Amino acid sequence: MSPRAPRSLWSLDPEVCFLNHGSFGATPKEVMAAQRGFQDQLEAEPVRFFVRELPGLVRGAAAEIAAFLGADAEGLVFVDNATTGVNAVLGSVRLPRDAVVLCLSHVYNAVAQSLHHHGVRGGWRVVHVSLPRPPLTEEGVLAAFDAALVRHRPSLVVVDHIVSAAGVVLPIEGLVARAKAAGARVLVDAAHSPGQVPLDVRALGADWVVGNLHKWLFAPKGAAVLAVAPDQRAELHPTVISHGYRQGLAAEFDFTGTRDVSAWLAAPAGLRFWRALGGEAHMAANQAQARRARRRLVEAVTGSVPACEEAMVGSMAAIVLPPRFGAPSMAQALKLHDRLFDEHGVEVPVSFLDGALWLRISAQAYVADDDIERLIHALDQIAQ
Ligand SMILES: Cc1ncc(COP(=O)(O)O)c(C=O)c1O
Image (cartoon, rainbow, N blue to C red; front, side, top):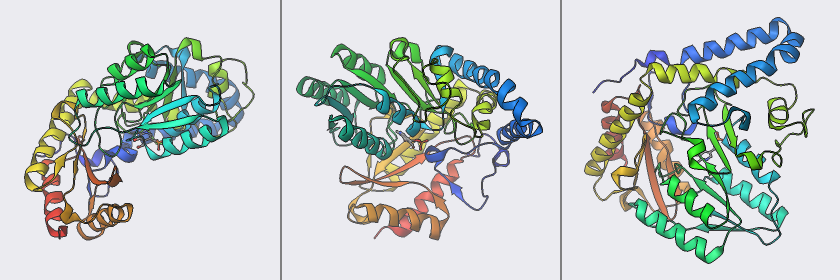
């Protein structure tokens, strides 16, 4: 099957079979042009831009993204990436010493590091909830989480909507509702959600939701949002304190010193591109492609295990590689990635997590089913 949109809409290297939209996204040329337009506007008159134009432009872009995500515009701010948003929350939240902070064993490494750093400073006990072995099921994830809530009584829960290495969409409504019912505050790491799966921030009822726009919503790199529940807004501060300190959420986050925020301003252009591809229909097509790819991979890579039940697949799909791909380790994951890229021109992530090697593909409008066949051929060549 051919791609649903010509690759020439992106700047992607034609020599590379690019199956990793998930890590950093890929920004279409027309969105990059919109970003350059804002950079030109800045340089035409820097003082006018920063002092008079920028505040309205940032709030206007925030309002468009907030409407898309079902969030209050006055409770949504831009940050550079999901990591920055997580750090702002963990650096601001006040918890007693010895408070328990819960995250999942599939937590993204940068988030785990941030939890460790802030946990040591605050004297928190950070507990990683082990998720069951693959294939994950919604029921299994919820049961493991329920048991951890009862056992650890956390004050704060940091939970992924879509886990990174395994690419699995978790039952986030159930996870948030359970954590809130147990009396915890909840930070949802929705780094992969905007543009990949439907997300209704208000209905979710979390205290904070952080989401990247530069992955699945086609924004330029450096565009992410942090949506904050009304009762958490006064306590939250950006990682960089500037003029707007204690003057409200927007004033604090919208200006954190002189810098290029054209990626934020061009985020609505990414949203327009996503809509032009079909919006909801585009997400559904990605999901169908990811499910097809996963069926092919499981069938072709004998002994592999799918990361999860089919209902939990969004635009990414992962398998656990069987032993003939080498003993699981971080070094082996890197080696496999490099061999796939260097010897076969296939860009696909291989991760080491929970004692296993995970290979994850990303569906996208520029991906063709033949790209999956190229990956399968490469895996055949590499297997020992
Ligand atoms: C689950 C999860 N959280 C956080 C991040 C961090 O995103 P960023 O590097 O844009 O901060 C990622 C990146 O892939 C992720 O997968």
